[in-house]
Image (cartoon, rainbow, N blue to C red; front, side, top):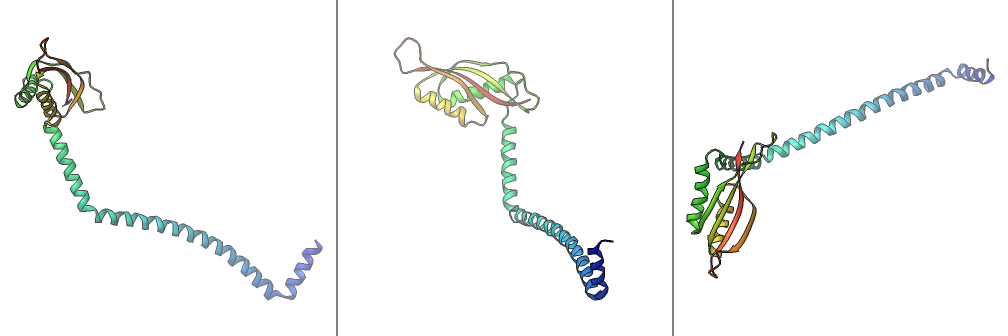
Length: 185
């Protein structure tokens, strides 16, 4: 046997209680490390649950606001759905622009519903293009554009051009427009 090991056994034999206490301290230290790791895991789990509880409490206290926002969103979606055009109902679609003509006191000299581009599969909507030629004074034409922008249908003006109407030096202007209205697929 090793000399150091023999000296250690001699010390243990002379003081068995001290050796037992040292051995007990080492065993309790190892157990303490194991318990400390478990405590860290439980503390982390407790913190996660506490954060989720606080988030749930915030959601419950904001429930009235969330319900109001959801109702406003559903109303907006309903309004969009009610004002979609149908590609096959050409007389209704063109009638929409004739109504704008009457309200703004312009003259629609040309109005055509163009063929829509092929729809994409991911999008539930498509744009139906219209080609228009409008004649009127500057104020009347601006009123017509305002009617299109603020009307119930969702519209996008793709292109436009202003020219003086005819060769006369009158106050009338011609406006050529390409407008797209939102439609369901």
